[in-house]
Image (cartoon, rainbow, N blue to C red; front, side, top):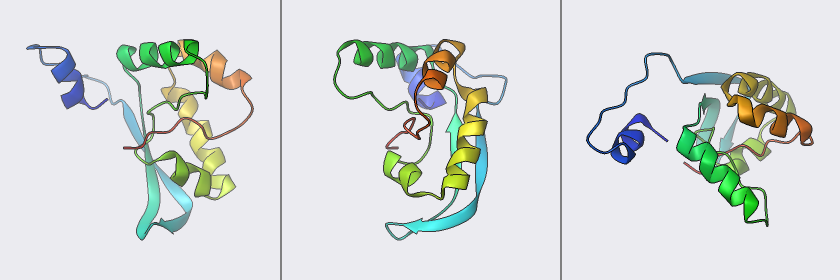
Length: 117
């Protein structure tokens, strides 16, 4: 959720974080995806509302929902070189809320924390 989206859900209040909540990870093996050069991926922290929605989606069953942590769709994460995916996963640890860290670390190594934004 962008700061603008967060502000919309917060009503009239303006929310501005004072600590950086995202990081750009440069890819060692850039590639083109659907005609667009992918040479970096931005990881961002989740809001409380996003984590709560994730848990509600999990409780409903079915497919494990994606976490909106990246600025590229899941298909881009799956298409990237495995070394870049590994580097992204290593950086991701610092951006996961504590209540999700154990859940993700217990899952098989996969790049399933993506957004379609």
